[in-house]
View 1 (cartoon, rainbow, N blue to C red):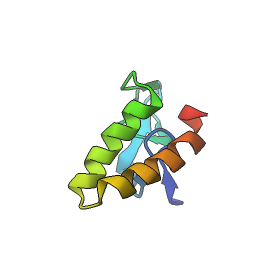
View 2: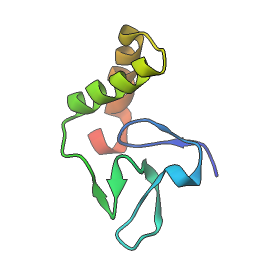
View 3: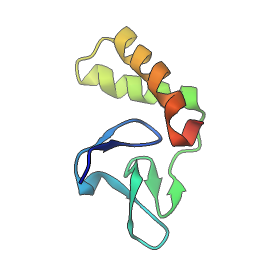
View 4: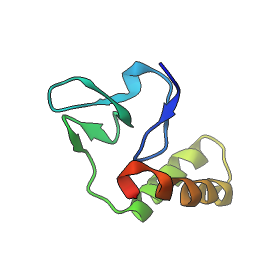
Length: 83
């Protein structure tokens, strides 16, 4: 599987088990399991809410908040869900 990122949260989709699902139960290669299930987004949120959520997880992984926020602010607007 080619390395992609979730088109909602930018999480690396490194394994097939991280892929969200379509309405028919098939894997969706654009979105992760945390963002997309049964053909629908799991969270009803704005892009800035997603940035806040992602920054929280990135900080837990040891990244500085300012760096994480810069990454999210530059990456999220380029993703399919937020265009």
